[in-house]
Image (tube, rainbow, N blue to C red; front, side):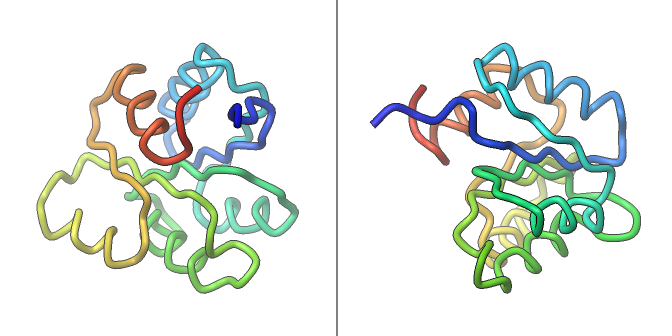
Amino acid sequence: MPLNMTMNILIVDDDKTTLRIIDGYLKKLGFKNVVQANDGSDALRFLHDGPFGLVISDWNMPTMTGLELLKQVRADAKLKALPFIIITTEGKPENVASAKEAGVNNYIVKPFNEETLKQKLIAVIGSF
């Protein structure tokens, strides 16, 4: 079954440059509907207004971290199956373990490029 390139994808990061870069990568890969949130609290509001097919979230943000957002998503009956990728500068094994324990689908360490994002997307939502 072909991947839905028009599904809504939510990207969450407090850094506007990073949001712009990820948005650009996703659009170059063919995704049409990318929504941006500046922190986990904003992201939860968007998610409850949904529907979304994927969340890509930074880990380190004020107000609510990406890990806290992930835990809230996994605790919500309507959102718990939503594919979720965390992006971070922290590549420590204990951080990866924490994210996996919380139910992350995949993990990207900054800096990364379009090809890395594409490979993680294929691993999480299938080929496109």
